Length: 443
Image (cartoon, rainbow, N blue to C red; front, side, top):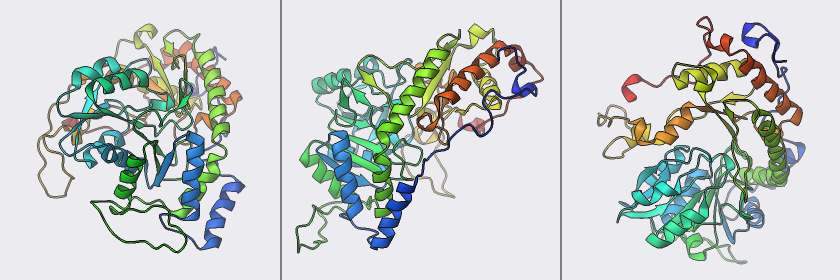
């Protein structure tokens, strides 16, 4: 395989066409679950049969005392922040590397996200850098369990206790991940999961707020349903329509809840397959110089929502920019049939929304404030990781539904491309740009 012509030269791809299973994995049981809702005629309601069942099912799965199903993971994060006492004008420390929903939920709460650099090995927020960012306006720390790997919760909890802060877990990518034997999402004051279609618990869109604190649950429930108190009604009780404060309409509907419940019955099996596939990749890629598979520290268990591979361009004799190496390498792997993607191109604080003095919704025809200069050196680890890595198992071809044979083919593809880097580096080879360029005036 190593001596074969690369697919970009017209050779046979290492991974044959049609080898991947696509996600989400919709089975007859999922169709039955949705049909059950349609046949019942019960399509909505804070205490619908499926919504209530999903909350009970996920409480058992996660070990949380209270679960509130909402319409997105972002809504669940917003509920967690407000319920935990984050107020307008407060500061919340978040990682510089995540999906934009993490800091955006902080803005929804009227607070300001303060970005912290990451640990380059785990890709999670670096506790050693958190403490220096704490001010008298800091009220919370929001770690993200990136790619399904738990953040260093003991270190973060210790910092939070000393400074009287709350910890809200963004567990959107980490259903079923554990930290020292404990499920993530239940380790801080509250946690938030996503049911977005790409997640390993897939229902199209939706979210789950979890907590062990009854008062936080009550506050989150009010925020999610127009500021009302909406406990499960007793027989004969009716809704009071009595708003105690500002609330949103974050309700989830019955069809989404039914699909999530059906997928939840297979979540452990999906996670187990993702871990088996990750083991195949890690064993195979560890022997390739310049390639660094993701590390799972002792005592942690990852869901492997994504498998992020780092590389050292200099070890391949590359003298150009890291992003150019990444794009050439990734494009050659894609030609070999490997499902690979960048996912994110820049740390979160590079995005225009976070480079203005005043956060406000974008409106057409309204002049925007000029952007503050973006300084990648302010977050060197996050910047370096995004320029020197890519992810295997993107949205439509995640690890949890692939065979171990396909993963072995991935390893062959890496070996094949690495053996012919001269072709990848060739001036005649123009890589496919898998993401649209960002305007120069925004960088």
